[in-house]
Structure formats: structure tokens, C-alpha cells
View 1: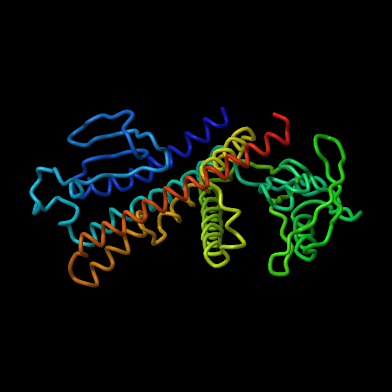
View 2: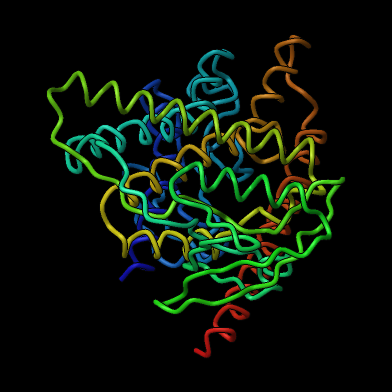
Length: 362
């Protein structure tokens, strides 16, 4: 059930993104020929008012099609309702609408969290630091740490609890590259000992694990609509800032952070785990993935919305459309890159899941 919930959320986010493009075009009277979820062969389709609504075989995104891209279209090339014949501001709105739709959805989900779950009212910390997940092939996984373990002490010293415990553990790891740390952890009610040697990455220790405070968060009923909106705005700003910072770190320190990039399989696995937890976790997961989709699509890469925006900007600077040969080469290179990257991430995530299942004896 958790996996189905995560898949439904991801599918919904894709539909919302493409619906942004679709409604921005139709609202302005621009002709649209197709609305697809997925790529490749059509599994299900329905024609409505000249638009093909389709579910396709490769679930790696979606797209809105325009008659401009159809060589067999019977619509005259000078039709004023074709996308390419509209002014630059109208075309820019169509391109940006997908990103804006995902950002709006994320904010709406955070407002819904305040209505349904409530306002955060504190965190009851328990001793130790929770290992939320480990990266295959990194120091934590090699030492035998698993997601769900609770680290209580390092080299005989208790960590305490809360965010300060996480900060203390992170500082110890950073300051001990290539040095062995002896951890005391709790797993399934049993106390275990783990010898962990952080990798040396530019003189800083790294273990490849996601750490968070151990405990539970409490919520209370909001005092009114104003408090719900204030909390949603604060959470939205925080999630967006952290997401952008994450992409910047990936671009500027690619060698150190590439291993932390997750593909569709890992994202679904995380969503399934959070779906079982319930509470606010699923709301935050939906908002975070929606913001990630928005930021990802805003990147100036071929085939993404940001890449389309770059082409539009260049057209505006030139005062005339770019050569079709250049645009085609730009888009084809982007398709090969994105599909290749998706396949690599799927293989990586699947191998990690297989390794974890083998460790757990499943």
C-alpha cells in the first residue's frame, strides 16, 4: 500500500506539472494536440476536442504536445493560434507554467498539512541519533549500519538527544577521516557495537548516511487561518531554499555529492516508508518532491523547461527564431542525456535495494 501511495503521489505531481503547461496554453487560446503522462508507446488514450490524452509505457515524466511539432499537421503554418506564432511573453508563460504549478501545489499541500495535521508544537527527543538511510558502497553501509538504527554513543561517550546529538555526531565524523570510530547503537531493541571508519574526502570525514534526531514531533490545532498560512509560508521557504542549495552543491561539488543523487526507485522507496509513518511525513514528502521537480525543470538543460526558456531568450536577443537544425540537435541531446541518466539511477537504486534486502535476509 505504501508503494502504491508513493507512485500515486509521483504520478499526481507529473500530471500537475503538465497540466500547468496545458492550461496556460488553452487559457491563451493556443492550440494543443496532446497531453501525455510518460513517454514511448501509448497504453491508453482518449481523444477530446482534438487533443489526445494518453498514458504511455515509460513512466519517466510527461509532456504536452503542440501542432507546431507535427510535420503532418493540416493546420496552416501561419495560423495565429500556433504556439510558435504567439508573442514571446505568451510562450514564456506556457513554458514557466509547469514549474509554477509544482510550486503552487507544494504550498497548497503545506497549507493542507496545517488544516489536517496541525501546527508543530514541539519535538519529544529520545536518546541517540536515528540513521534514516545509508548509501550503498559508503562507509556506513560497509560498517553494517542500517536504516532504523539508533546511534547512542561514540567511543564510549553518550550523544544525548535532539538536534544537538546530530550536530555532535556529524562533527565527530567530519573530524575523523580514515580513523575508526566505535559506535554503540540500538537495533530492534538490541544493543550492538559497530566499528566505523569515515572516508577521507578532502580532509573531511564522510560516512554516507542520513542522520536525524530520534523521537517524535507533536502537533496542535491552529489558532486560525493566519497561523496556518504563516507556517505554510515558513515551511515552503525553508524547503525551497534547501532544495536550491542542494542543486548548487551538486553542481559545485559533483564528485563528492553525486553518490547522494536518488532516482525514481529510491524516491518511491522513501515515499513508501513515509506513507507507513503517516502524520505530517507524507505531506512534507509530497511538498518536497514537488519543489524538487520544479527546481529540476527550471535548470537550463536541454528538454527541460529551463532549456526551453534559454532558447526563447536567445530568440528574443536575436530578434528571430533560432535555426530548426540547432533546436532539434539541442532537444535530441537532452533526450539522450535525461533517459540515460534515468536508467543509470534506476539501476543504481535497484542494486541498492537488492543489497539491503540481502542484508536483511528477505
